[in-house]
Image (cartoon, rainbow, N blue to C red; front, side):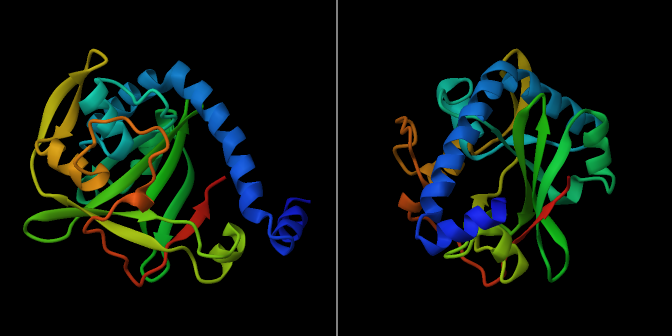
Length: 231
């Protein structure tokens, strides 16, 4: 039934509107769960990563909220986290599962089956984990997926995949800072990272901020990213 509705919506030129409506209700539910269990889940995430020998640190919106608001952004509804790819044990997903983090979706490249982003849920809270790699002697990077230019996601996943960007960050060490009564890792050059993502005015809250408005040194690779639904 869902696929039939999607086909009709695409034919009538209403697919984007359908996605926007669906996203609205999904985000409403995510926000309710996040407000109730977000802090608890964030602390649990740090604890399980430390036990696995992995340094987890906030990235993107979660990093911005901690730095600017000393907490989560008021209108945020998920956790953006990062780990260094070379620190992850081979059984990282199993370790996460035992701690209550269920892998829902992974994003990967077909060329080498390399997973670059994973989406988990725990306590009904959505958690995105981005793998961080070395780009050069001075930069790290991670991949960030985008919607397909014209296709519904199932068709895109079956055919040519999704566009993505390589997002660079200045290489630096990590330091521990206290938030919510718990010590978390943060990049030493957090301000520089945030300027690179959100612009010079990152300290000014913008409710409906979109990355499309930013002109940074992000790179659009030829590789396409694919989704793997885990359950």
